[in-house]
Length: 235
Image (cartoon, rainbow, N blue to C red):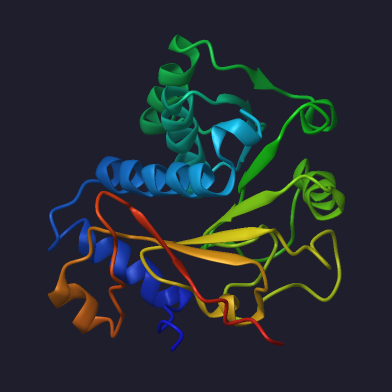
């Protein structure tokens, strides 16, 4: 049976409640999200299949999750490269960037060149709060993600997808279907259209919070922060 989904409105409300009644800080939630993303990469792209990981980060929380994931991937033994063209001035994001710089993780402005020299891609550009048009420099990046033969893991949503209505009917994201998706905290309605491998990361949600938002808590194995779920997408 498919997991119950969380609308964009309820996802924002749940995040806010986690940071108030739940007593989590945004740093903690981003760290847990990024850790989950890194573990999904490890399952999809074992070190012996290729260590080069290109992490494409947007300006918001989704990009922050990507920065955290890159740090964990470095410590696992991967060689991450960061594409982060719209860098936030927020202190949290600046600290995450500094942590990567201290590890000598390279940042690049040349996405096509980085794409040609990687084994796996993390799409951490836009998450559940995305709406409206894709703005520069991301249209060509999303087109490249759509057209590449290199496997892509999308974080919470394939970038450019509508959270409620799935893939766009036109624009740079038309036809974009990543190899894998990791839903953070809970799947969003767009998962109905998704046809790749689907992971869930959110091993911090209390039973009471899950019940309030009518969510399912899957069985995580051992130390895993992610669990793979059957694909719902048949549309």
